Length: 376
Image (tube, rainbow, N blue to C red):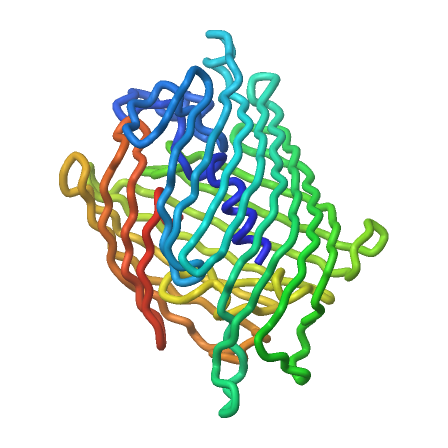
């Protein structure tokens, strides 16, 4: 799935740490790096990292029902800044990441993020290769069972350019090229979705974002709104023509000093001949991301986050999702529950970076997640 690969390629740019601000800052929202996509880890006392000058290497453990257990190792070079530049915009960076998991999935990629003109302009992108060994639910068949192996391998490149228009609002354009091969353990001729062995897609899109969060990695207050539309067309060199629409809204509220309530709603829709690996997913915990590949999906969830001590915390979460016209024909148009509990350990207080361990359940499944950073 292209979304899984995109997240892994941009891991250092969005999920490795928060901004340059400190928790005890009197006015967190005045720091431009509070909303940065590319955090600067050079001055942090993080024991797991290796650092030499402006170059930093950090390992990130992962465990989830989609990719099993593994390790992502990323290295980033942060471009030097003047004191004046540090005050008005985050540091630009170039990063590389590689992943390997226990189900023999592998990925490597190279990404870049630039900021200029006092953070008025932002440019980001990545290229990479992935070989993912996934499990795909299919309609229940007494002869083959409900699950088959699904292997995706190929190249991915994407980029986005955005400009600040007012306050915390950014708008921009995006582009993406994907060339994937796939093999499915048991084909289903009656299934309407594209199961071609090789598909190339190319598209351009529009993006809009509002971000007033105090810290992206672990927000205590603020809101995030995101909208994206991507148009894949044969005129751009794509094998198939289809459109992708995604929208999400998140909100964070500090109920008291140790308790934060967070919630999000999001939706996805594909119009046209979308390939199987680019279908919508239900973005909840308790099942593999491949369980509900569908034309349309929506979900909502909330979390109660309790900071018990300086470093330890507990989380309770619950949510519900929906999918329409999904590949497995499972729970189509029916509520998909998700609920569970989690433990947090803050590995870096200055950036609110948590090590996350979650146990989640859904209708007929349960899963354990280990990662760095909050689920949303």
